[in-house]
Length: 253
Image (cartoon, rainbow, N blue to C red; front, side, top):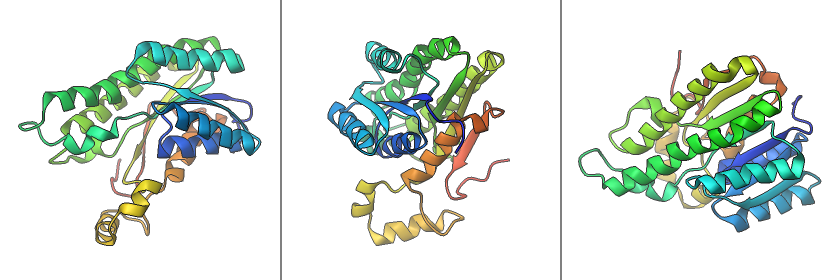
């Protein structure tokens, strides 16, 4: 892929999709800064990239804490001199199973979901946007979800947060597009992470496969490839869009 060599990209959230994105970007020549709530994981991920010849630093980072978000952005500027793009990918997956329905859900679950998966994305945007403008432009890619559009009887807070992320993305594209800022979102379907692959029952896998219009379920690398494209120069004329990477689960106009 063209247009990633020596670009400085911050990956905010180093889970399965974030890890795959870090490797995809580094393999294409980008200089990557990855932050994760598990700082040891972020540092280990950065070590693996450097061992394979890439450029990466990792650090602990809490997307819900403004000072921590600022520290991640500052570290990228200090290490590499500026920022060209950010992939905002953090979420609190521990509360997803408690995200039940509007009548029975504890407010603490609702508040934590929006605190991380919406307010945190707002904080990342506020922190990185001035740096992108100083660079003369750049790209922000948010991780949304098919849950923002498909409609489910459960997970209202998660769906609301993801829909809010898409609204934030369109706001950024509309407000700063003329200053060469691009904002887009990737909406994954069911992505089988390494942890899920070992614990997902075969019956559940078959049921999930029936819901997609593809011959297999998703992998973290599927999302990473779209993120890499959207932060590269090859997507220079794409702004304010949501891309479903879901095996055809959701058909958009």
